[in-house]
Image 1 (cartoon, helix red, strand yellow):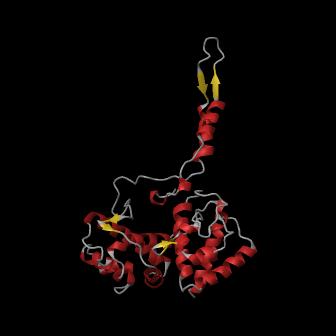
Image 2 (cartoon, one colour):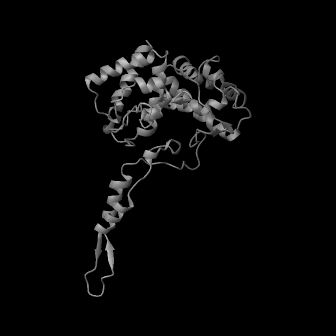
Image 3 (tube, one colour):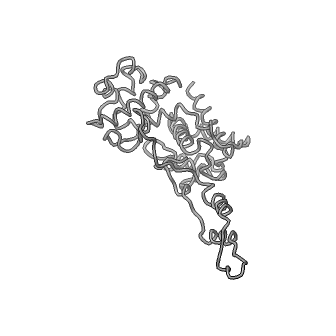
Length: 301
């Protein structure tokens, strides 16, 4: 499935009306009985099968509804306006501080994510006055969370509790959501083709050059790739052909071109368009993701 706010042209249904008309005619049967020549019947199952194979079978499901009667934090649309506050992206440095310093373990991130969902539900119900109010301050003063409950967000001086503002809550939600999920866990086999030894060597060398742009550049790129793969490729969905390139070299049709990178996208970064291997495709998503993950882990040692 592809979230409504991430739908692209490639996700839309397209077909040639002439081809459809030909399919209908091929599955039409005219009566040969005397005086009944104007009666025409159709093989609707065959027509339905044609539509599925040629029109809708290769495009993802686009959900437009949410559950009814949600519990606090369940079914809340975490984007745009949240509790009356316009949402903004968290900066790269703050993202790194939250994941590397405040919540370095998977268990800590899961605990924080669970608590955050409860807080978001209450934020939607109660609303907020100032987008600049610190998230930690809101949790203590408005939501009346105890010290034990607040510990899920790190210590009192953690960046999550002091630097994250109410305008960053949606961005924080997505950051934690994707940090606790393995986006390749339910990746369709179509996107798990192994890379050649040459491609692996080239990618590893490229990651070193990209990290030379600035410390943490590869980690930030990795976060963006994690988000995109999780949102568009989970549950064995097939949103793109296997031969779709990951980097279109500035032409903005590559899959990774649309990965979030700070306040923009990877496709707008010159270093990505120029350095990231152009021969890697959607078929290599799993291998590419794992190689970048190994690199980020090694850099953190």
